[in-house]
Amino acid sequence: MLKKSLSTAVVLVILLLSFTLTACGGVGIASLQRYSDTKDGYEFLYPNGWIGVDVKGASPGVDVVFRDLIERDENLSVIISEIPSDKTLTDLGTATDVGYRFMKTVNEAAQGDRQAELITAEERDEDGQVYYTLEYRVLVGDNVERHDLASVTTNRGKLITFDLSTAEDRWDTVKNLFDTVASSFHVY
Image (cartoon, rainbow, N blue to C red; front, side, top):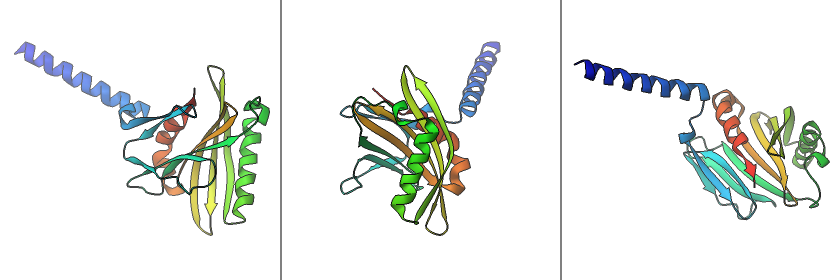
């Protein structure tokens, strides 16, 4: 009887510990899948329940798009632009400089149909590879508010932008997930 009680207690402690660790992390790694593009040299994690979207006919530079099967307006994309092969991300400016430049480009290209506002711009360094994390609030049309989180870096003469997007009213719900996914993006 004592042995059975002890086994039950150990199982309960393990379950409690696993629930606590999952709650602390916000997003369980098991709820994410890995995507790797060996041709362009990047990879990232994306949520289970997100599906790939055909990018034929998409804007130039769009390399891959995934979207949530349920929340269809939640999506991620990877956009690749050519830059001189000797340029690094820091050569293009600070995180804030690049963030404002992206914002200005989006606002000008949309011709009033889309207005982006830069909220934060941060730099992170992973083993000598610099990434900028950029957070935007975007107004589309007259009254649709969106929230974007981007991770930007350079690799092999390319500027690679990894962007996650959701409706503004869902941002608080998906913030931790988006932070985890955006920080999983890296080049090799």
